[in-house]
Amino acid sequence: MILSKIFKNGFLILLACLVLTACATKKEVTKDVTKEVTEVTKEAEATKENEKEKVTAAPKISGQMQGDTYIGTDTVKYLADGVPDRVFFATNESILTTASRETLRAQAAWLRKNSSINVIIEGHADERGTREYNLALGERRANSAKDYLMTYGVSSDRISVLSYGKERPVDGGSSPLAWSKNRRSVTVKAN
Amino acid sequence: MKKKFITLILLIAIPIKAFALIEVDITRGNLNPLPLAVSPLSIDEESRKSFEKTLKKQNIGSEISTIVENNLRTSGLFNPISRDAFLQAPEIANLKPRFEDWNLIKAQALITGKVTYINEKLRVEFRLWDILAAKEMMALAFTTVPNNWRRVGHIISDKVYERLTGEKGYFDTRIIYVAEEGPKIQRKKRLAIMDQDGANNKFLTLGNELVLTPRFNPTSQMVTYLSYFKNLPRVYLLDIETGTQEVVGDFPGMTFAPRFSPDGKKIIMSFAKDGKSDIYTMDLENRLVEKITNHPSIDTSPSYSPNGKFIAFNSDRSGYQQIYIMKSDGSNVKRISFGNGIYGTPVWSPRGDLIAFTKLHKGKFYIGVMRTDGKGERLLTENYYQEAPSWSPNGRVLIFYRETKTNAKGEGFSAKLWSIDLTGYNERLVVTPTDASDPSWSSLLSN
Image (cartoon, rainbow over all chains, first blue to last red; front, side, top):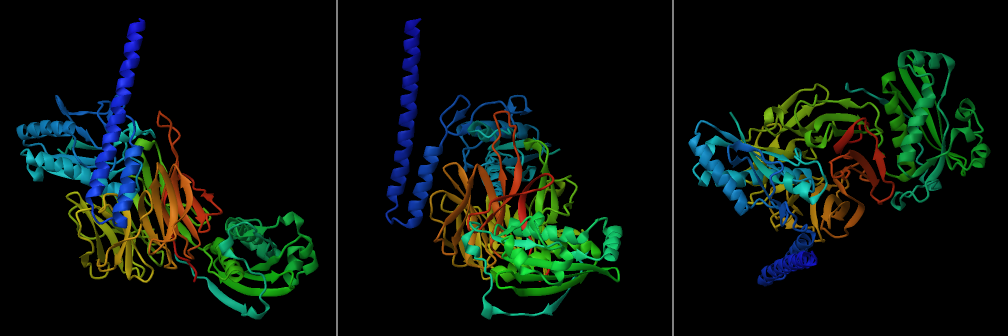
């Protein structure tokens, strides 16, 4: 009993260390990037500030999030058997994660097999941004998914994109986890 | 929404600058609102009965004066004294105020007047008095259709505000906004319009499709907004009087973030394609489309300077959303926001000297202003979520919307309109029948 408690605590401490080192490395990377900019312009400085802010504002790793990207399955629906319909993004990002690419490759494979089906990729943002910027961000995320489908053999004329910005959240909560579920692109059948 | 004419007759023009009567300093905020008395407009019995019949208002004189009182109080610059304290009856005050009586209740200014029913029209005369100097400061008369009675109250408010502050008023104006209803994950949104004080609220769309970001043209007769009609997000143009609508331009994708140019001849907006958003204009006369920015980043929320020579917008070309200005042809792009955090929704003030914005810093949202060179940043209000400031036509007040934080179940969400003075004082909830967002303030309807 006691042993297992010690193990548990030890594990927690280990986890905390990992989290801390992860944070530390992140910061260093940021620093290195800014160091590369030889000309210390005001712009670079301000960007550095923003990046710093982002690192500090990054939510802790929880069971359903990696960084601040959602990795759970709560809201995920399926295009077909074993083919998830959506992928998730980090705050302000439209870069596809490894998991997202895997999902999109499955979508592409299924679409290649079902060549009569066209899709709409709906891009979404969380509620923590201005409405107009989020419309553009949703469009960028949807295109990020579209481009990936295209590189895996789905013709561009079968894919249309539609941004909803922050207008159609799946989770109405005001928490980092809710926001992470809402930063998504969803592939839906158009016909 | 018929356009109604108001004839304005200057009874006695009295430029008594030499006397330098009461002055209200609008730069000081509402620390010391000026005590003033709005004596109810006097009304003869015959007129009273006629208005009661046509407008279903028992005493239209008193109703109009109430509008004036509310407007002046809301401005934060004036403190209307309760009518219960008045010693002089409206009929007598209108003929010749006894300054001692008004001095006794500490009024520094007094508004008197009368309203009459003449040839099925409503005629109002009013006067503004300086109590301490025992002098008339202004006298005006209006004739209009009786249905316009609320506007009469707003016009009186504007004239009094202008006479006492030296700046144009903003009371005879309207707000167009998005009315919101329903659960947060499936909001129903409709375009709505109302008077600046919340009266005469009307819904302009049915809520069958998502609508966002309505903005008035300079004459406030037209509105440009984003509609998801047929699930195709496009910028639309709406004529408020006729209700006719049309898509702006023929773009193969989403257009959004529309605004009019200061001359009303162009619409400036963003067009999103392949993950990039650039700024375009369309000339409403010859339908010519011009590409203004050309950058792989997101360029959006464009807003013209009042002289039409510059455009402010936000772009994430530096990595994060920041505010830039450029010449109206897209040249000389210059970043102006360098504070901590991200910056968006720049809106050029009607005076041209300031840019209002939304700022996100350390998880809080701010409405602020900065000079057009980016210097002199002042944050006016901080909250969980707020954005999209719109200027009153005189550039003294900003209206914006604010959303509340929800609990873990997603309950407790609301979106409301708020206004705040440029001074950072006088923050007020703007009451709407439903939840509301994306407000846009009209120009002064009577000039």
